[in-house]
Image (cartoon, rainbow, N blue to C red; front, side, top):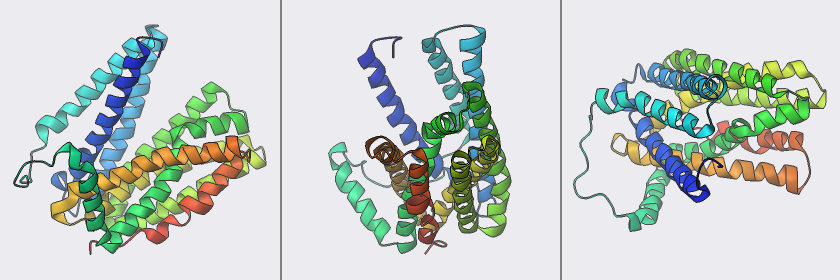
Length: 311
């Protein structure tokens, strides 16, 4: 924030946030174009795994610019932006467009609200899909709350981790997410996305319980159980729920319904931290209580809403 005009920085951050989320919708909707039903789990898992390898690359770029070259944050963000562009180029040039655009002009911006409501009505007409979207809001809320920064705060404030230890812990979690995505993608092919996603959510419940036990018993070592367990569940979740979304969506509306898929994820990203702040800061009930609430009201009921195959 101190590297340039504050308002321009905020505007650039807002544009980048909107752009990356819009790109995520198109990226996820490409899954049917780059896979077959028999390989969908493997391809999805590779995408998740390579994506988390990108997290390591981003960490390496930051280490080089900040620690080795001793540059400021501004050139670091420029380097990260260039890296993002370079790794996005294969999508632009190597993936063919396999669908035929719908006839007519795209809807104007003023009709976005009406088009969104129409999409939700169409999703509501597909019970399995609609239940899955509601379930996705519930478990994404809990997962984004944990991995969106509160895990680092939790282990530092509740378990007494130093900054270097926290960085190593997150590195272990990211490595486990890489393995979870790549390996469990093949499991999705064998046993189905619904089965793997349900197993991933159960693993999340176990991971949250381990986090609570680590804090309540002051057992530092349990954090090193939490990191790989949560990372494995993270890779499995994103690998399987993306495939399940394809299976539940009519072929002609995959892009449209992936927009809803992304929307519930974004609402969960906002709602989860607000709920955490309410429990911890406003009500003063503590981080362990907030974490327990995520299990009780978000992750545990979510598998009940995960539907079956495409109706």
